[in-house]
Image (cartoon, rainbow, N blue to C red; front, side, top):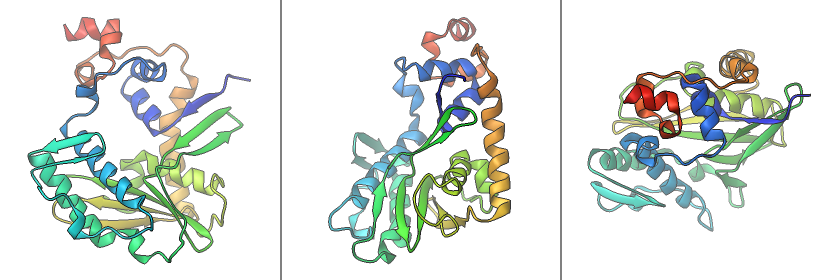
Length: 258
C-alpha cells in the first residue's frame, strides 16, 4: 500500500500551479507572508476572522449591522489589519452578511461550529481528505456546510458553476455524501454565501442531487489525479514564480526570477 497522504483544496490548487510549490508547502518550509497574502487575500482573512469571532459568542446571536467595525477605512479582526479600498470592501461585506447571517433563523441551543476540520479516509488511495468549512450547523436531521466568499466583482457564480469556481465546495459535496459528518446525508446541504460591496447572496447545493455529485466528482478528479500519480514534484518555472510564497527555496524559481 502507498504511504498515507493528506489532500485538500489547497493541495490541489498548489499542485495545479506547480508541483514543487505544493511539495515545499507540504514539508512546511517558511513562506513569504507578503506574497502569500496579497491585499485581497488579507481582506478575505479579516472578514473571516471577524465572522468567526461573532459566530463563537455565547449565547449565540445573529450578526447585526450595528456590530460592524466603526471605521470602514481601517479595521482589525484577529491578527489582520486592513486599510483603504480593501478595508471598505470588507466592511461592506460584513454589512451584507448581517442581512443573511444564518444564526438569525436558528433555534435556541442549536449546534453551531466554526472552522471545524472535517476529515475522511479514502481507503482506496490511502488518502486523508481534509476540509475546514467556515461554519457548520445542524438543521433538522442534516448538517449545513456554509462557505463565505468575498469579492469586489459584481459577478456572482451560481448553480454547479460554483463547484468549478470554488473546488472546496466540490470536496464538501463528497465529504457530506460519504458520511464524514453524522446525520442524514439526504438532508445535508451546502450554503455558499457570496459578499460584494453591492450585494450579498446565498446559493444552495444539495449533495443528494445526482448532477451536483457528478460535477463535484469531475472537479475533484481533475485536481487529484495528477497529484496522486506524481512522485518527483517538478518545478514549473515561469511568471507564477513571482507570486509563489516558497519560491526562495526553489532553485528553478530563483534562476527564472533573476
